[in-house]
Length: 392
Image (cartoon, rainbow, N blue to C red; front, side):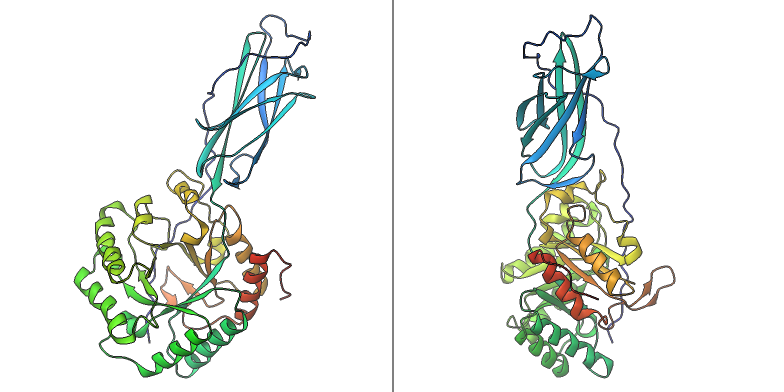
């Protein structure tokens, strides 16, 4: 029976940065006679978009800013210059004190600016937002760490039947014979793996990496075994568990990644640090599991911090979450909606009601399938096509 290897997870928290005022200044235009007296106070405040929110970079971002002079709305026609960082800029003019414009920006953390000058008095407002690439359909990633006998046979049947019944949802399972360390084919596992593939599923071979401390030669040996014994007709890539998250281990994973890709550039590599690693790991895995933990902790997941906001430069299809202790169908649907949201930007997902406690190292969340498996697939499909969620 494969053993669980707990990974670390991060409790990221929202950091609201205090930003200094900056930006280009623009002389006012429009012929209003309602100009401030000498020494009058000009203020600019963003009203749209919401501070620290996440948007899609490819769509027009609606901007609005209010300009006041001595506490009263600036005259109609007062010019406001909007900008996204040092990139795109646009002009707007006030009506009822508010100027509007639309802009597009690059992905990642962006600083918006709105500047106005009235009778020689100037002000600039600054607002931080995050822009992500256009999202793609959510995929389901199943840690299938159960052996096909007894309850494990039921779990494989459940996995396969649900996959076959939901052809519109991509389902990938992590195939885990003997913790990824084996020298012969297990005929029982090959049978259920073949059935799952025939149902439309994809399979990744499980290999643990010891957070970068395990022998690279042993890791390569395990990788070779999947393709030499089970073959590329079954195995579409490798799931690297216990991935490190720090820069000092990057070279280890670069070597492993290149070794897998040398076999076939189409092989998929999913790395599992269980938390957001340093940004360099984006180059050593096609997908990173940036969260592994309890459902209650997933509710607080938030990449909008200095160390992790680089995730907004990455497509949702390159970020995965494995969530356990999700008690019931309603909690599962809430987690799916969160994963699909712009803030979470998570396109590869799995939730289970099975439990694990990291502090006591008790439980095994990947030793079976949740009772709401079929509804989870239907929920993901509904989210992908923009339809109402199925009833729990």
